[in-house]
Image 1 (cartoon, rainbow, N blue to C red):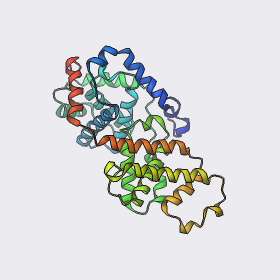
Image 2 (cartoon, rainbow, N blue to C red):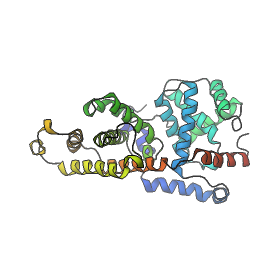
Image 3 (tube, one colour):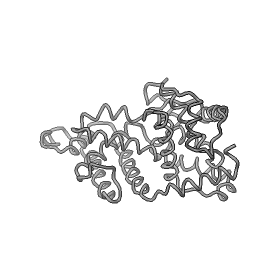
Image 4 (cartoon, one colour):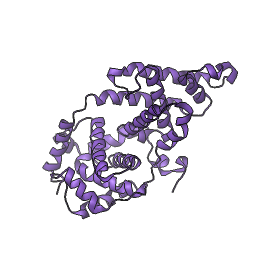
Amino acid sequence: MAANYWESTQRKHWQFSKPELARLRQKLEDEDKNLVQAYPLPQLRHLSIFFNQQVKRLGKRLAVRQQAMATAQLYIKRFYTKIEIRRTNPYLLVATAVYLACKMEESPQHIRLVVSEARSLWPDYFNTDTSKLGECEFFLISEMNSQMIIHQPYRSLLALQDQFFDTQEETNLAWSVVNDHYMTDLPLLYPPHILALTAILLVLVLQTNGNSAAPPTPSTGGSNLASAAQAALKNATQARGISGTEKGPATSRTKIQRFSVWLSESTVDIEAMVDSIQEMISFYECQEQYNEKSTREQINRFIKARNLDK
């Protein structure tokens, strides 16, 4: 097991650039053009929101910890970089990912219980045969090349939260942002510490703008938040190489200024943070347009039409 992210299979095999990720997905669609045309699906972000909802619904029934649910979501993302979604039963994959993630996060669930709860949630699309979940587990592990150790942003967030946050509300909001990032491509693009720092900066900007109760949305001024966050990152970039005395007295700095100074003295990839901030704000704007009913119907249509529920 790789205790160090930098030596992990996650970094070596499951971290992509945006063009690489786009090519992988396009390749899957090109290989199944007729299938893609026959069963149109919502945009990828809306599919990710739907999968997140299903993981949470099943996780709640099984009393699964958040970290295991996060691991399950990343398993689903990895799998769908290798297999076209219309060739699968997503409900079976969700249940399998949760089952496997619980094993890997050392909180195993009995296969019969997982199947029973999944069947209760999705009675028209889930088989009671436990062997189906066992087969899907083998398929999932195989497509991930048995590389199942996941490094999460939660660890970095725990290590840094006391340095930048004063209240439990700030900490809770940062955890919420980290939870939300699993509905984006960010876990496949950037290291966990970048994503933890992105959550911290978003919270600091929200606090400054007086919107501490919820993540950014168009109603809380997403573009303004992006500008404020990017300004802080720009300041950090410009401050690199400047001595501590030139940055001003620490006692007079705001939280965001302290964060910018900390970044400037680190080796953190600020460009990656800029992109992550923009991706999260774009996601929250996209989330406003999400239609669960429409998404569910489009998924259910190809499952039934292709007999993937058998």
